[in-house]
Length: 274
Image 1 (cartoon, rainbow, N blue to C red):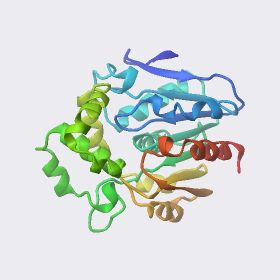
Image 2: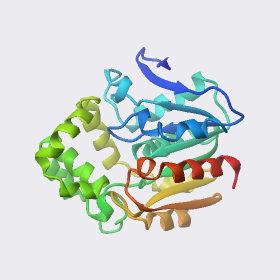
Image 3: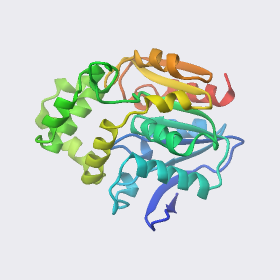
Image 4: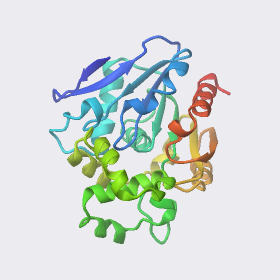
C-alpha cells in the first residue's frame, strides 16, 4: 500500500504485489476504484506481479484533482507510473474507463513498454451516429442525448448509467437505489467524474486500435449491457496483431464481480500465452 507522487506533486494510491516474472497493470472503471479487482488479485498474483491503483478523483486518490482531469490526464498518469516504477514487458488490462485509458495511453505513448493489452467491455467510440452504432448504451446514445444530459441532475445521470451497466437494478425503485449510489459517488470527486464522462463521450480511438503493435484480447459481456457484444467482431476486423475475443455469458458490464472465477482464469490464460 503506497502513494505514487506525480510530476505535479499530487499522489495516486496504488498497490503492488511486487513479486512475479511477469507484470500486469490493471486499470479500473469510471466511479470505481482499485478495489473492483480485489476478488481476482490474490490468484493472479501467484503468477504475476499485479499493480492496481486509483485514478485521480477516485477512491484513495479522490483528492488528486487540482487539474482538469481527462483521458489525456489518466494516460499521462499511467505513463508516469510505468516509468517511475521502471516497468517493462507489461500486460496492460483496462476495464471500462480503464480500457479507454489504455487506448489513450497507446495512442499517445505507443506500445513500447507493453507485452500485450486486455480491453474489457469498452468501445473505442462512445458516441453513436449514422455511421457508428457500437457506442454507449448499445448504439442508442447520440449527440442529442449528450446535449439533453447537460441539463439533467448528475445523480440522475449516474443512476441511468448504473442501470445500464446492471439492467436488473431497473426493477428496484429509484428511492431505494439512491442511498447506495450516493455512497459510491461520495468516494469520488464529482467534478472529475463529469470531466471524464465528457472526455470519454467525445473520444474516438478507432484509428488507434489499428495502430496497436502488441497482441490484443477483448473480454466482453453477453448479452451485453452498456455495450454491444458485436464489438468483439469489430475489434477482430480492425486489430492488426494477434487477437482473441473472450465472452462472459449471462454477464453484465460488471464482469469482474459477476464472473470472478472466469475472469481470473482468462487473465491467467493470457499471462500463460494460451
